[in-house]
Length: 186
Image 1: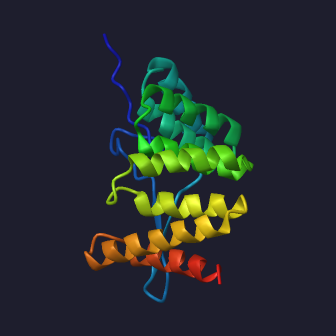
Image 2: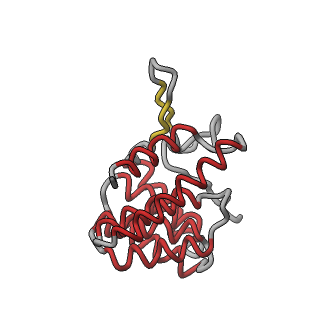
């Protein structure tokens, strides 16, 4: 009998009542704004990913979500290994390149972070994460001392997010965060 491939995502482990738990927590503020947070993976979630990877080693999605879970607990070396493996399995996946770029940035490996974030941008769709990728790239470029390029990327991120907000498909909260960061460039 073939095992059913699990769909595990960061957050609470899947249960029969809730096989696809949310990987996000929304924090509501008294001023009417809200912030979406990524929770920290639990040991149980990490163990379930480890088992799922043993059962399905060629599943790029499992590997990338495992990388995100590992990143949430601060295990950046292991997150980098899993994200790299996801890219080996699916080289044209912009999300995998962006997650690897963010993890590399967090370790201080700025040249590789910039390279993977640029690749993610090249592969991305404006409605599916380009704003976040440009924002992350701007941070990596800024930390690498490439201020002019960093400013250009964050300005592009602001423009993209403004367009998404005006089309009612983007987050005004994300736009405010990026605009605040852009203001710090002055």
